[in-house]
Length: 509
Image (tube, rainbow, N blue to C red; front, side):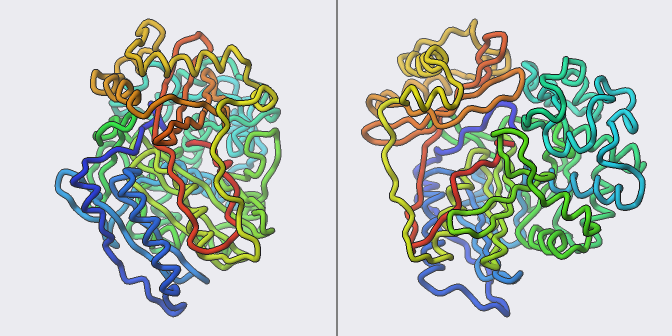
């Protein structure tokens, strides 16, 4: 989950030069990877750091439940140049939602709630609760507004809050659609589920997941961060803006993340979680099936179950996964059951492209008779038919593209910016936008649209003569500009012929 999207692709030259890998003992009963595959994955890790995608990244691969590769790259803390090791823990962002969904299903298995009951059965004080079921919240079909979209989020989010205070402003707004008719990714929904867990169990969310999941599974490095505790070995969170230098990520107090994004973990513990979830150690067969079965509601990530996505890859194999971001960290936990593989990627930059990294790692590990199509440069502009398919008018495109073009020329109308974005857009950030002029003329291709009331965001692939960028522009319904982000677009050339996973349909947390 992100208030202002952290931009992550710039780092000091001195740090990039020191982007060596710190090896961790990955040998096991399953044996190590072939040297060629290990070297190819090493290259992905090094490229992540050398191209300033994150200060540090950790990559782990398991085959048949045993580690066959695990390495950290870069530094988990820039100021002290501390390298990641096998004890390093990272915020896992919206992968937290897997644990929240499982907690709800565990309570259902105990007969303490029903996922098809209305929210009003458990939280009668919440507006619209009689119209929304727990199933709606689990599947992002509840229709509540997004609490992270409030324009003072950078201010209120810096102070501790109860879950009820976190969602208060969002749930008082009218529902943005009839529950069950659409899917719109909702952190609000998962904070409401946290409230249900706490109301039914009588425990704080952090205590419930520790006593019912982490401790029974031996997940000794995992915890739900409460407040601003600074536990040992947690990677420091960073962001950058428009290819500018690394900065400490925007401070959001972790009580605002809760059941939507507060958990800290590492590959060892995520592997234990995956094994328990797949092995039926936590949930009844019925609940496990419900959690892992995708339900299509509309075109918006139709492969989603309860905080899990299950996708069939081009080679016919299954990918079970979820991604997660905070303002300064990103992770993907992906399982490929038909290949007996797991790939876990953790980074301390909020916009690290974990999807691209996982795609590339899978391409190294799973040979196929047919190589994937090569990378094609984007068109100079988005064809009208393609824009229409995404539901974007020519006027909306002109507005989004025009904003960045003017910003690069040094012209930003502060009156049009949402309050939190205006406050965050510092002189250094404005200078970083102007510095993009040195990359040459920009050619835009619209690649995605995301709706989270009250904002609509547009994602462009931007090509210059010297670089490829990703540009995200978000506008609120009242016309104010919620965010405008620019990051470098980086691809990893696979070292072996394979059929990679498709482009991410994981919703940005």
